[in-house]
Length: 575
Ligand code: BEZ
Ligand code: MG
Image (cartoon, rainbow, N blue to C red; front, side, top):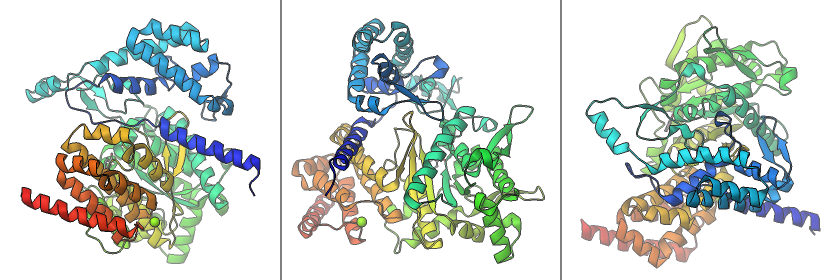
């Protein structure tokens, strides 16, 4: 029998999960080039922007200010960002309602109305809230105007386009106005001090999560690093690797980050984790000095005179040199990417085209595409995309956990096929080589309080917040034919997580079938708007069942087969 306490805890956990889904910010529709965002979208975005402290603008997050005004305590995380306490978390609904109302007031009647609303409902001193709304006013005006088309025409005429930073709008509202010439980043400034501080919390939580589930830290992890993500976050992914290895970045006399130094074990308080990095072609091209830095970090850690149980990089390199009689340079290879001039894993294409038999093929393809080493050997000679399949196989054979960071609310693991091609692809490659499926994690650094989730949890959350959420799919269907393709894309990307990691629950496919296919009205809409992706969606569901990822009811299958053949008739009639 469960105790009343255990029952209460379970109810509280369920409540928190519901809140997590409810509060998740999702894009409700696509951006139309040249058009400013609608008032409702703007309100959602402003609310999210106002949730974060913005030291660069001297403002604090509204939920934090409201919690304080209501007399609910604040705690500091080790990374220094304030989080609301458990009491405040329970008061979350109230805080949320007060913040939403203030944002609505602001949209309707301007800064002073919003300031008054917060003073009255949360005792918030006007000086604190006014700075936040002054910032929001600038952002709101920038969202209301849009000169993308004009800028495109100027660019086509060869005229000057003002530069602007490339980032996620929530992370850095300075990307507004859009329609500027996006500039990326100075690789020598990566990782920034803020990125390094934020990454400490993520790396710690990642290791704690693994430890809670496995009783010890992982000895080796495989990480995926993307270029655009590291641009947006000024190198949070890079910084996470450095924390796992237990090193910190060092700037040279020109203030360029070109080196690292070990964090002493006594300070680190845990073993150094071995890290295998797969970097995208874009990262390789944009962050060449960073690629060198990461390789250098591994080689430095491998040389430290430390006990094996506190330095897994050294331990693994030594073991490999002894057992396989290979040289240290080869045994310490950890940075892998495509061959020079090549991009991507092709795992996504193979899955999308259904052109595969066994799942191992997907992991093998990943390695074939990504087994090119980058860095510098002990003689100082650069290694610029040298095929190193054996070294990669060997490094992956030790991996116990795989991981990728998500840093934007706009693109999640079922929005594009790139997450499963990378994180799914590497996880499948590890599974064969290590003869065991790795633990697969994603972090979510969207909120001030970074979250680690298993892949399965993330698939469930994305499914509930997006694919099966009427707010999301109705938003997409407003775009007509494109919306149907977006829905089909989400279902196929979800399928990609079955193929590469068997991480999708049966209910996901069952609910997709019910929502989009077995509901006659919905099916009618999809068929009218765009029958091709509607056909592809049903085909994907049948493929999920055929490959053993979905234990579907026989009647449901019969219905799907019947519907797909009638769709085929419709499409042939069109052709
Ligand atoms: C990148 O930014 O590195 C990236 C973007 C899309 C797909 C894969 C990688
Ligand atoms: Mg299953």
